[in-house]
Length: 584
Image 1: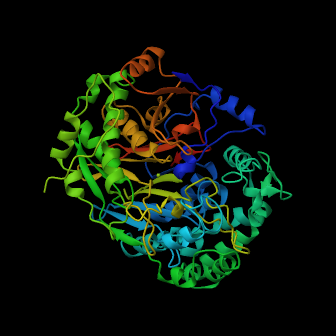
Image 2 (image 1 turned 60 degrees about the vertical axis):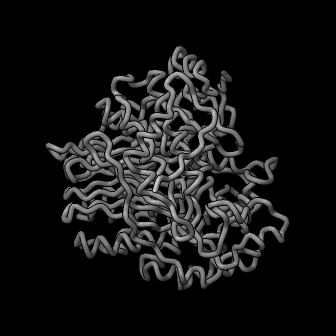
Image 3 (image 1 turned 90 degrees about the vertical axis):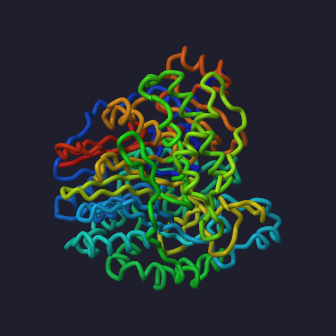
């Protein structure tokens, strides 16, 4: 086993940042040491009866809680929380990214899914990139920003739903008061923003990390244009404040057809970018059907393709065939079973997952009880599988959760893909654009090949479990390939072992799969897992790498549990981040 005592957490936030990464010193070496020694906060699981919010930033959580206190719905509060995160957490989510929603309506008992991810622009073709000499879409810069930002359309559609179905009286403009104030008057730089700013100002990494080469990025996010802000220094974003004011006053149409779209496209045109005014005008979010499997006496819901929600559900579907409780939480058998289930689910994901408008995806088969049984039967509890081929069909950011006093619930995930996305901020907008479209393949035969108007494979997938038709567990995490695995860890620890949300999140975690910059799969597991357990996993054939305790490599999770008998809400947030779970 390779001991990584000073592992910098560069992987999962880059794959698809959902919650945020966090560290608190000026020097990278000191940051690594900080990650090795940090311990969980001692906060108890907050309990509430009138409403609860959990997010990866304390300012954002308070913004959402304020909306709940003023009579807003869970949807209104989720928009306020997410919009605030777009200001205070630009390293992980901005108005230039995508989001996905699961929304439970307590009046109708229905769960709805909203896909607000952007499509590739009309100029984004494989031939275009190949003509420029690229075998892979660049990860940063103007050519990486090839999909329309979908986040604002998600806010818009979700708010319309809140007005129509939840009968909110909360005004659209009022939702944006807090994020406007933070953008205009400034926010104290958090440990996470400080850390990721340091990581991304690296002149020795011309491909990924020298974001200071982009003028607007430097002007906004670097002090005096050349060095990261220190923790506690004030960061102001006046251009973003003006953009938010326009959104508050004129609505989402201004972002896609008005002055904001025109400013974004003008800057892209000037610099050889990919998106057109027509791309923005044609964009729309879509209401889709959530997907589900049974797990114990609950129904686990997740998001359909173009996200990897199917993989998250497949893991639970496989685990239905194991007595997880008897394996013992934290044992080699426990980790082994979930890791092997993950391999089975990833084999299906990698074969099928893309925009369902461009391919047939056999979801009914992939989520069937029989398929889960067949996958489980392939797992050898004494030996790790080294290669898993998918069975033939028979016939990756922030995550936040909100529950309001009426029982309406939101599981929302929002991302710009790599930390700070493409690094491009169109002049005069303050909107940092995502690089999600860099995940497209330039191989015409690949299931996720680039095509104009196509949505790319998304690692993002918000989760929710219902018990007796009502929300029981609202949960999610950041972290690319780690998302399905961390979701499985949180779900099994709460459902099978009776842990509280905070206990489930604090417990040791692992990551099987590729991380950014790595071509091969490995198994990273935190050093606080007992040595006899990691030794046993290595003995079974797992390529174990022991990493720092509470490393950001594992992503950041959040969860809310609602007691089915009393309705009391209990929240948890990740000790690795700037987060806060709070209720009243």
